[in-house]
Length: 135
Image 1 (cartoon, rainbow, N blue to C red):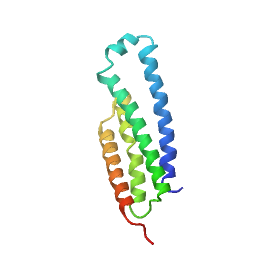
Image 2: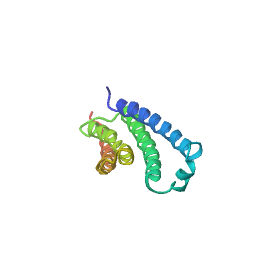
Image 3: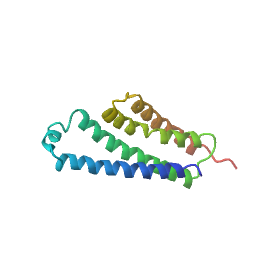
Image 4: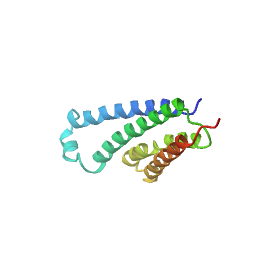
């Protein structure tokens, strides 16, 4: 696959997942049995973390779609392109790590690794775009 296509495919797939997860959150808040408890704890603990995962999941998925598009259209190549692509994908560990914390009690290390990855991907992509193309 061309560098960038994977970011677009994965970004769209993850975005669809987190959109569906958003509908689940709406159902829990507005229609589920015990919704009063959900509403009472809406801004704390697991409820707050769940919303963070939803928002960051869509944001980082969209970032991957944008990265992929830029990599294909500019085109971005050279030694920084592939690491930027993979680090952007690894950035998805952040929202998935939040879900892992909420539902599985996992360590926050995945959240931190994902956050560092998406920042590093952004820096590498900026550098790759700034480099003049080889003739």
